[in-house]
Length: 471
Image (tube, rainbow, N blue to C red; front, side, top):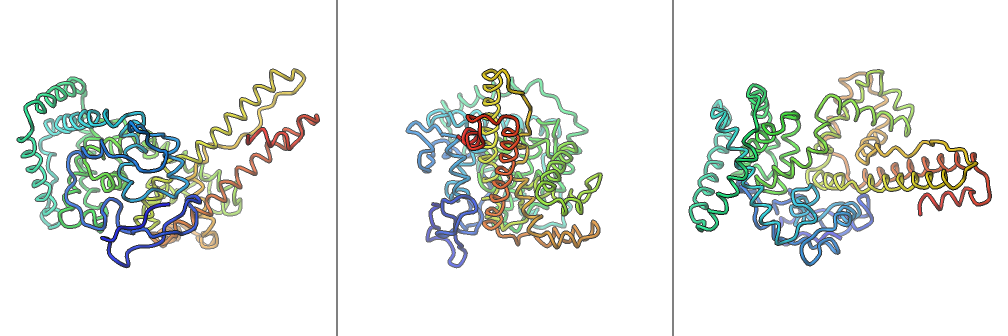
């Protein structure tokens, strides 16, 4: 069970939390609705790195051993079954969940890993800044007073970081110089397409000021975090030209920055996340995800599918933003953060793949042990139907009547806008779980029925097959 809020939180700002019955479980305890990592207080500008995270311990039961190694499967299972983690644990958990720190690393190894990541990031950032000195600072037109203030707070942070370096020991400076030399050699041969990078920076400079500045994280001195976010996004675009920058990345990266509150930690965690999901920002990735969502909706509700899906699937593309940003705007902010870590733990997807592998191995064993048995390639559970697709389908099904009444694209846009920030996460998760398990049960039933039609021997009756499938 997630711990209750500490007494420093503002009274009246808390709401019930989940118990351990899964992400759609019952309410129990209290949970603060302020942004995770903020503890209800507006933040200062994020530091370059967060050395304390390298030595901190995860207190979740059975997740971290005495030497600081993390059991990844237990971490992911705990995150899913408990409906997320406590805001106090979230920053450290995300560093492992998203791959910034290898789960196999120890408490003694992580400070060195962080030093290496810090130096490499600084060398990477310095490289594009030297090639494009005119892009080092956000261009301001003078009409946004808040952004002018943000620059001031960001510059103050830069001054603090420089003064901190002055007090480092000679030994520490020598070690950092060696790491810098290593990083410079590593990135020496990296070249940029300056025209493409400048175009990426132009779009970033439009998107960053639009990032949700109503969040407590970006209030007061925290406004300077907009400039930290900008540097992270430009560095990512410079060193990942195959992806570069696409609209929406600022919202995703902002989520990491808010929770991790560190420029270096955010860059590497965001980069690890994008290794898996960068294809979703490309046209092919968009089409594939919409194709999968349409296929799942057809399984769950053929009538709604036929109403929403045309030959070119234009009518269902409104779901893409939901999936791309992990429903960031459809739920209240603290719930959206919790949902993001639930979806990112991949627990149900891993279970589906394990079942599929076990079934495949069983088919191979039968193929070689029963010569007279016809071998057929029966339809397996579609493991491409990830939990987030079921989440999307659940929202569509829960608003079925409203969607059936939509007759054009304008009405669909109005419908999606009406949902922003108004959906109940716990109720939606519970219904999503039901759709997911019902789909798995139905698929398994269809598979086993087909098996029984092929072989009807006593040792291979239906209940025997069912036991083998889920044992």
